[in-house]
Image 1: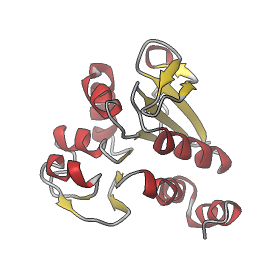
Image 2: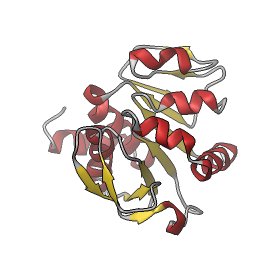
Image 3: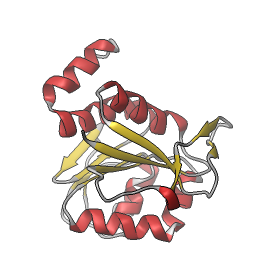
Image 4: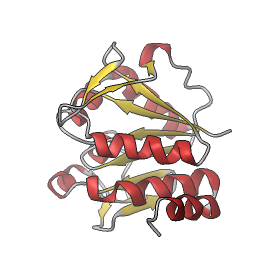
Length: 182
């Protein structure tokens, strides 16, 4: 079974984080909501409190097929400041495993040098922080192991692309049809 960690920090964009979790779980992917705050209750950008599944310090990341960073502010800034997450992202990148980010969060990947020479997208106001990337305005950009997306309005196509990468196009289309998206 494929395994994914979705990282939550105070100020994360709820739709971007929870849409990913919901659709991946519908596809049968073992998906964990991981808190980087030291507590399970996370305060979203729009005052929605979400209970994470596990604390960062308690999660075993050794078998993760994909790491996902939702956007939102100050959620993205909080993710960017977490040194353990930074180290984990660098290890995942070195192993050529999937890393996905949406909205403002692709800026974290730009800051780590992961977007150099790659096609990527983000929330329009964050495009300048996609250091070294060929910036596109498509809803989702896939370049090798890196998957990026633009924001709340692209959360469903982003999630379906993650399913496609992990479970195949047929499963992605099945989930898209089941939610009356395609």
